[in-house]
Image (cartoon, rainbow, N blue to C red; front, top):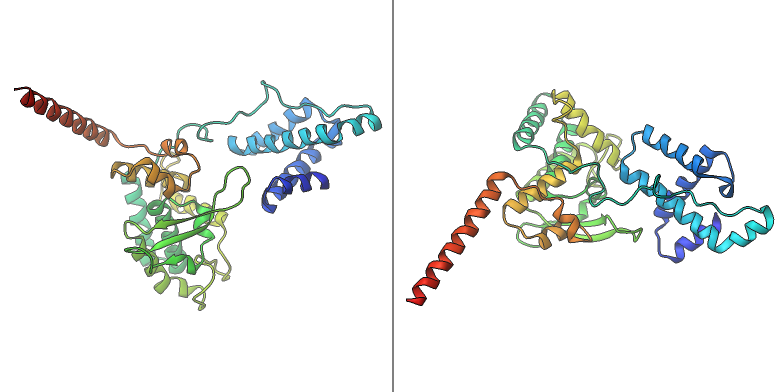
Length: 327
């Protein structure tokens, strides 16, 4: 497997991506309990049944498949003859049309629907009430800041969690900018950096957190922006679990509970309704392809009706002007 690691580095993959690939291959081989050249389609099916049973997302299962396929292709092209000479077996083909996970446009099982405005309002009001009455003000105030940033900036959970204090640049632009240093890259290319403007009161939110909440975790004014109670960087898994836990504590039903990703869609939808064009929104969300951005905006019926009326009014005025010019 060491030579495959080297080949991945030659292609420019990051160490973290390579490590994930190795973990995937080891997990597959542990389940099959065979050498890689001995596995067959039944082993692949059994492995994927286990992934489905664990409740992994479609996109995650597809990434497992992509890694295994890539490794087998490498093995076949670089060492296929050697394996045949030594073991008299061919490197197997494990995936075909009946068990292959194909790429989906949005990488999700169905269209992602942002939470309704009344659901969000209820959630924010609930958190504000908890901040006034709960024993641990610091953790609730921290979580409130993270969740609001998800909704108001459209950043991914990992992008927010990996922020340092220095990434909050209040000296740039009219109200400040956020330096996203750990943006999602494409095809293993590594992290992608970008700048995001502090819109809709995000500057005031972050200043409030820096002045009154973060000092409750640590006295140091540098380092990680969001911290755990032990003073180390908060993990993205803790933040995600906290979002679900706090909603359920407030009595939200399974249908009402929303995810960090849905808050990201909420941001995209709101910006679309405010008139932000797709190319600008693409940069704010950190997408490589504008087609992905198109799937993020879900404008409501009122907004659609308003746009139709505006288009009709514009067309009507053009016809009237044309008639006057003809006279």
